[in-house]
Length: 305
Image (cartoon, rainbow, N blue to C red; front, side):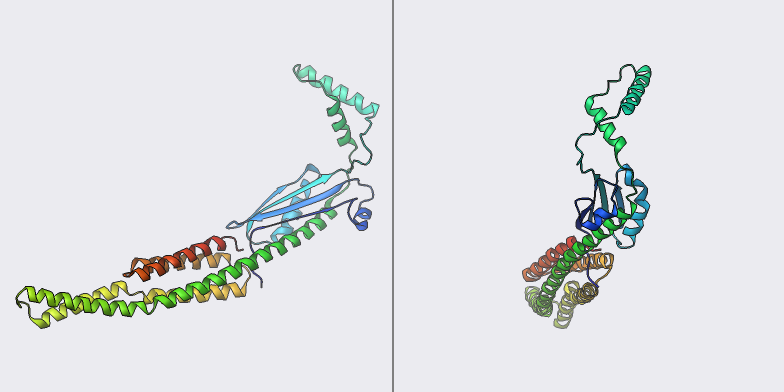
């Protein structure tokens, strides 16, 4: 299955200016229907709709359509009806003008401070009164479904880019882990020899009051305790296991965002521990490089569905 990003945008239009089939579908309606769908990342599926009054009744059907295809993301759906205006400015009928005048007189009797209707107000109200009242439901559902497919295609393309980036970062993390692994035994051996040299110097300064066997045992104990403190083999093993699981999920695809987010947190924890146990500049550098890569992965994983 592909990896889907939660970020995407798609739009679509149909109406008299669209295809021949679109025009035939609504022969009595002079208008163009437009739909926009945009989405960004979110922990859950969060749908919001911005619809004109004529389309608000269709929101439940649109919600059902989107929840069947989307699993996560903050998704905003906008729809609008644009009149073609082929007839130019409408001529208000005397009956409408009489009705508007009566309504205005009634309002001013209760609200003397209300302003009079302007010519623009009358034309706007006349246009709204003469607007077609057809059922946009079938066209809205069809257009929204087409737009949703475009959105899914955009999210899939972005998801493929994110998946490639994650796999590249995984390869870099494996290289860093391979560089860190042989450093630990070398460091332990160096520190062991350093402890022995210090205790030999201490015995010389103390005039040999400490038995050689006891001094050597204590030096070895100190070296062993130090080795335990700086041993990052366990962290590297867990890190390698997390890398394998992340790679498996990315190649599998589907709804992997939440699982990846958890694994990235674990990677960050192992990289932090490795850095805190570091006893050489080289190991410190490796730990810092790991944390930079993990942070970059964390930012991108936030966008995966």
